[in-house]
Length: 228
Image 1: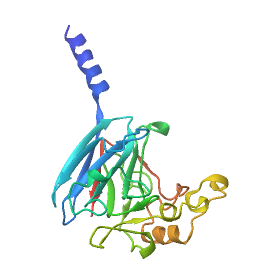
Image 2 (image 1 turned 180 degrees about the vertical axis):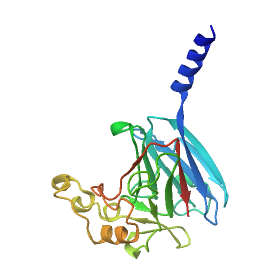
Image 3 (image 1 turned 60 degrees about the vertical axis):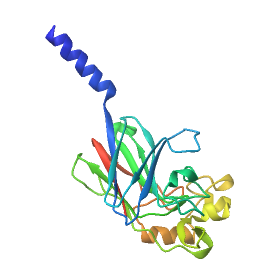
């Protein structure tokens, strides 16, 4: 009987086990954090939290989850802290993204910082547990956001820059977005804007085919995303 109870408890734990994503706000302002699962068509984040300076929150996802996490000060044209009102990040309202795929190839978790659509906040991703860091294995990618060219700036109602578009988001050109005849690693190369981003944030995705120097892998119990 005891063995049966133990086995049932083990199976329940196995089926419900997940990974924890901790988000820390090291910024000087309130940051609204959002998450979205890959493939979801929702225009709004699935999970949200408003973090005061120095605050943190945790999201528990299944151990096969894939999705993204981000933070914002505010929406374009608004002074409100409720940055979830401007929807999910994209070409119009970019944000620095922490991207995850749990238990991908060879059972490893894959994670990266993406600036492909643009960026807004400094970010670091750190594995919680896992093997000792060695380059792209259980490493901690980080990005201190580079200066934003005026032509790529997203501004609020008072003219302050609150985010920066990528070349793809700003121009929509196939050569910047790696679409159409440029939809392959051989055809799509980093332009001057992507190179500037890569120079400032060598760990981060600067354009769609920036995989080789931007993808990290680990097998950890969770991950910590630090903003600012």
